[in-house]
Amino acid sequence: MANITFKLPIFNSLTKGLLSTNEQFVTVDIELTEGEHTFISEPVEVGEYYHYKVFAQLSIPYSYDPETQFVTIAGKDDGSDKQVSILTSLEQHPHITDARVLNTFATTQGTPNLLTSFIESTPEVKLVIQKSVRYAIDALVQQLLDAGVQGVIQTGPAPVVTPENYLDYKAMFAPDKPDTLQPSLTDITEVQSIVFSTYGGTITWSLNYSFANVIGSTNDPKPYGYSSWIQLWADKCNSGGYPTLCSSYNYANGKSGFSCSSSFVGGHVIPGTTAKYMPNGSTVYIFPICVPHNNNDNIYMSMRYNPVGVVLKNYNL
Image 1 (cartoon, rainbow, N blue to C red):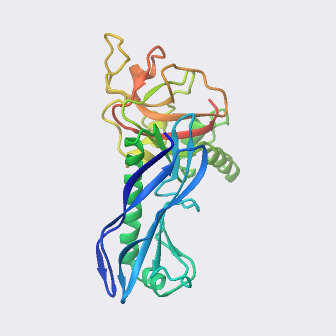
Image 2: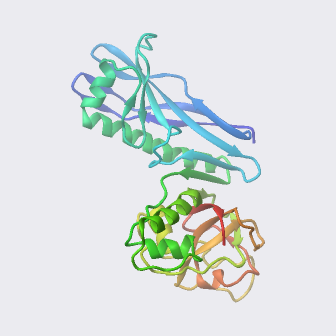
Image 3: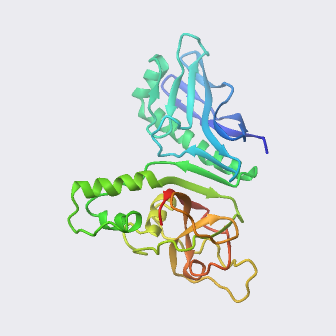
């Protein structure tokens, strides 16, 4: 698997003032070789502003890990400079710097010109472009999985530790730190630092992807608390909702007599078919699994439901 090619949407139909655009698609060619890459599509004509033709390109910074066959992109809420973005230009004019429309804040970057000024001053246009980029990200993830990529990581902001949720995040990320009902700013910043260095975004696994338990991983300290592992999964992966089915629903790699329960935990899991002890500093994943799956290290699981999970890097059990 060296290259995969597919089409992605880049613009939607819009008429606002002197700007008119139409739905267009671009051809995307993703090189699946180790390391960081940036793909920029060929410019396509998407509409007009005044009587000038508007051109757009899709920019996709990404990285690929051939060992795991995972692609990493910036997620919809990632405010970094690695965001998937739309580049626009008028008439492809060499003296008008492209305006980069970011996916998170829908702001423009580049030398100001008549098009960027209009976009910046027209919230409706910014919103449509922002939605276009976000839709392109969803389509990109699905196309990558359909092409055989095993998982797509989307980086994004880590949870924020506050006095209200301090004990919950301490229990998850710093269990050896003493409890305190009134944490100092030093306490909060220490735990926040651990959360920042550990939270790696979300990952979408392909259907039927095999995964297994992390042996000896911490139990969910508050299975239905504000910021337990399963709540972290719910907030980051499921719009705040709890699961209704185990991610590996009723699958136990052929073991007879196994059935899932309706009690779930945020399970620490790893790719593969063998449960393992993971050394400190490893990358593990949080997916909602039933208690019987969580308590059985002799079977492996298969992704059937809830394909989006949390990435924990540099994780210390």
